[in-house]
Image (cartoon, rainbow, N blue to C red; front, side):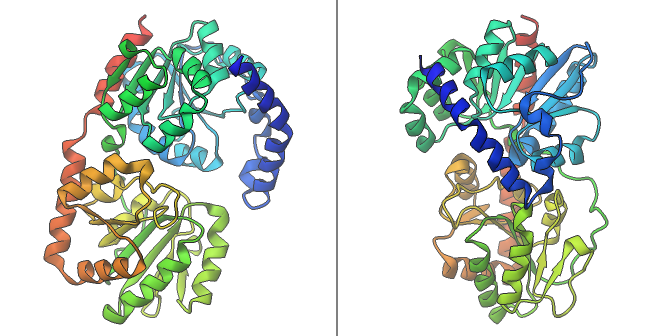
Length: 415
């Protein structure tokens, strides 16, 4: 009954979802392309054996890439299909894996769309990243005998409380999951509390620690001045960070802010904020390098954040001064950068806790505290190096989840 009500609601909302995609296409034309895939209509797939990995957007794609590479090595006779729901996720996948994998957009979770997509894909196994629960997709997999694995499963206390309000629907979806690889004991307990079968749940660790660092610098010249990076910023943060940078400049006059907004549709608005704040900005999208008078280098390109981290001396992770939940700090930590974050990190609580405990990250309550810590770290090379080394050590010591998950994938796929 609960899934029927869920499906009815989605059918009623379907026109609004289509209108929302068209609205987003006004600022990001990629939402208009490959429109048929949003309705389970796409290029015909051949009959080769296939593993299907779903990673909703950029963060999940980054975490999935090492897993996908490992699956390609373990299953050389299989094709790998990766689905995402956002164009940014698609672009990140192509940037990291090129044409070595297939890609499609995952349509809305309507029963007839999921049945049709599953018949077209005919996967040997579906691997879903993190907490993406798709009741109709999972039900279609169960009917057609396709095992479903939920990997890198995470469930914050906040998400757990929200899912508990619709526990019958969530329990049915989790009942269709063949194997659930949780990131931590707490995540495993929460999934079981929502209806996952205990014998199907294992703690395998966090795949995001197995991240791959870029081999080169994408032609970006090193900076000869103290720089800090504000990565994956959201609406409501950029103007506050520009004000923080103004305070930093009072004590470190040659400091440079590398400002990287999360969403491409905001690039122009953030450039205007820089102008309004009186901060001369160079734009990466135009190939501009920071000059002596440049105060902000705007990272208004897609996919270059990994190459920008090594140019900075300190990293601030966005989505944390506003209640978005923060963003993954492990790429910055792996580059040996001390990490700063605002108080809203509920999406990455476990990772930040580990970094803070090791001395590789700090949580700041407000802009004044952030400015003070930036000034201190940019001015003290010894402390900066010590904290950066601690951050990198946390990443190194927690690797290994990919190997554990791939071993389990092989067991599930072999029946």
